[in-house]
Length: 124
Image (cartoon, rainbow, N blue to C red):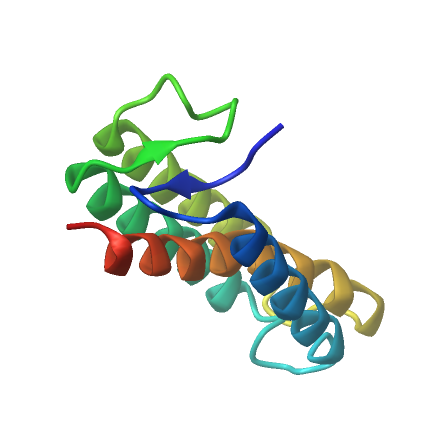
């Protein structure tokens, strides 16, 4: 299932290559206290929602099968809700074993946000 936004002239191979590089970077940073903080996890969800909204306003198309039927505003509201739930539900000081999971959760918002910015730059 394709995930993310696509704009005019966007090449999937390049996006996939960039996503692998970002995933490796997140793996290397999994012990980092900043990236595995609940504020970062929530902030990445907000960043994903805002950039998705901006890209869709400029004509991009959502490829994520789960979100494809939603408007940019609906996706933004959903991401804000997810950010709120994440911020209130996750522990303030996660155990060492939870840091990897928190890093992955940050990546689930920040990687798409970075892709969305790339798509926005590529749109007319």
